[in-house]
Image 1 (cartoon, rainbow, N blue to C red):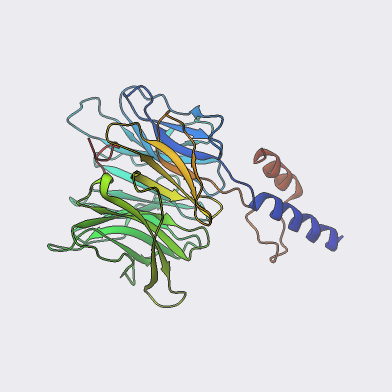
Image 2: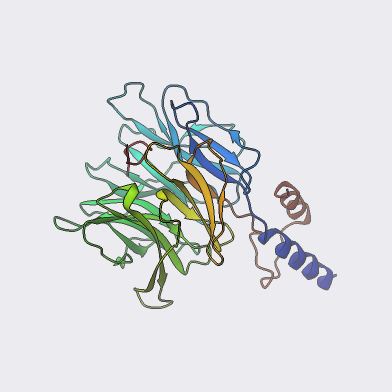
Length: 339
């Protein structure tokens, strides 16, 4: 019986972990409000999840189990005032609820790998800082206290958080990593004159960080950079430019769930619609996923069993079977001006 349990666990783990999940993204096909959409990893079955006519919904992030999506909602109808709160909804768009309920600008939500917490950016202390809260919005705690810090991203093991920060006058926006308790901050990005560094995320194995180096903060002068981290020291040991087509303008990006590709929103010239592409790092094919429908800020959910086959601690058979079945199958940033 033990052998059968191990065999079934290993087979299911291998079958599920190799699959791609869903991609969540933001889009405004009619040029009005941004809404949250999902699609298959090949660009098919694009489905609109939010229909908030009074303001934008954007900056979506999957929960680790793929059952929920955190996102930002602009609650003000006046175009000259932003009131941004963090909401969460089920993966099908149902049960939308406000987590932060604060008059400040709250943004950039990112789930901890165990799904218990959400890190986010807020200016509720009169400067942009990184906070963390429970997944239900309780127990809000400030993590950073520097002139400006934003866009937190949890490492896959939950021990560290990468983020963007400006540490003072004369310091450009750079990428840093700190422990999840805010200790031991160190710089990841390679300084480039007249460039701002915009964090895109960790590789699924936690060994690399993807970011954009934007000369003069222009998308037309941006390049995607992969920083490889030292396994023990607090330093990056290698920087590589992702060899995208030279005429491609880059906006937002993220790692593909397979760790072998990157997703990004791009366009080939000024005035074109932003579309989402997948670029395979090993051999370079560029795949257009949204095909003139538009879209930015793609995030792909990776359908993995929450247990390694080496652990030999399988979930209840009914839950494994259920999960396996469900997972089968302007020149500037067009997004609202939040960090």
